[in-house]
Length: 122
Image (cartoon, rainbow, N blue to C red):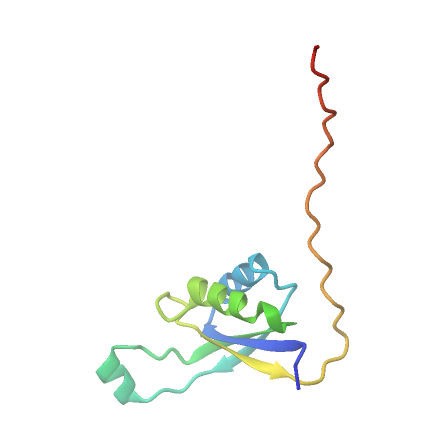
């Protein structure tokens, strides 16, 4: 069964959702939902990998067409991924049923004015 939509879920440190949404919108997303969350961590992870687990998190959920999945994941990872202060992780979940979404309108290319051809002097 082909799923028309996908849920992109990005979990970031508190205060970094604007970075996620800016990157996602630049990649074609129309919007998202932000949820407050708390993270828990394993002290061994902090000890061995040098990653600090920040308990206050925010989750961004974006519903988008499946063909946009990779572009959106790459964009949010670049802006707020683990190598940034946002220390975000992102993943996609197939959405089997969805109501309330309207198909994205195709992006219109700017119209160029037709330039009349010059008549050659004979």
